[in-house]
Length: 506
Image 1 (cartoon, rainbow, N blue to C red):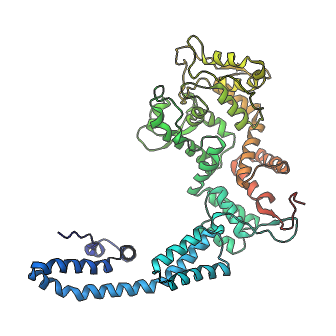
Image 2: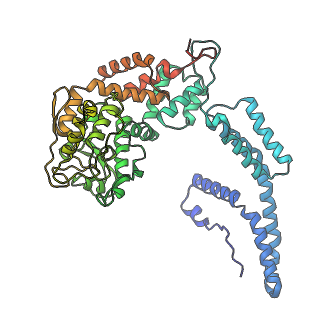
Image 3: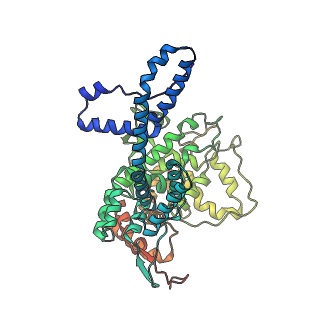
């Protein structure tokens, strides 16, 4: 038995009756690409020889039927080989164009010569075009220009503007976590990207592109310490059997909320006081929010009455800062203090006993923490962080709103901060952050955004820029695009130290 797997077009009537000229051209182009990948005309010659070998054994009638096919099949294969040979220079030119995209700038003459020389040398060593092309492509993908965002400072010691191509790379990796697109490269090649208005115009266009979701995925989730939450595996399946199936939805809610915030130029304060979130049916059920049917995601308003809205009500943040079987006011309080407010806390003393994974019978979670925090060596820090965590005790370890703990004991989310300020539950905490710590919260967000945009830690010399950003935010409704535009137009984002600068920058 001979089994064949060939491609055969049967789209004549489709082309004649349903497609216009442009669609026919596109369909033919796709078929031609398929032929180049499958090399079906050449493969058909081998298939024909197999059939003839099978038929010649005892089927003279088949030999007679197949013989007239030889010449058309071989002629088609010869024409196809000629077409492939003619296409080799075009494919090499495409490889060079790809290298320019991969390097995020036009190829230098020496780089062009290197790639052409490598390909020519491989062909002289009797490698076929496909192998020589693949090895030359591999050379592009291991080149330092592709692997690193290298920048070339000019002479001198003082700060100097980066090139337009380098600025395009900085901007694209900040907003899109990827290389610049054709439009941005075109603006850079024209030498216009260093103009402030052009730079800001490109920034606005990029922020409204769907690729700006990557800023939410990479910056936003890392800032909140929930990056890769869909792989979170630190919950007890016995205690929380529904968690594994919900992890992906919890992560998607976070990304959609942050992407909406970043792309639609919302107030930075809405990160705390938003009255909306993004839900599908399974996550809405987890939150006990009715009226959301189907797997599709949609924006849902009026969620504060369900304990949602803003980063304090996201299941991803609440579940990450909790234990495997119970909540953890310490983790949540520490997260609020260090991540959200940027406070520096000392390291815990050595040999601090670990808390039990399950709350002993007769104790509430809060009482367990109070017993642990009574140690004199721990009390000072716990006085700062525990009240934040206590205010979030109305959420269980996977982010569900509750009025009783696992033992049926009532949840007490009323507490006092270290300075004596009373707060009660998530709403009290949100109000405190918005009214008493608004500037601290906003500055910490801007500090993290600036560090991400610059690709380095924020330094003392960046503090004046943060002051400038906060002043602009206060004058412009705290809109996040104000902060982003201030970052990309800053000297820190646009300049590089000169080649003659010492290690101290002087």
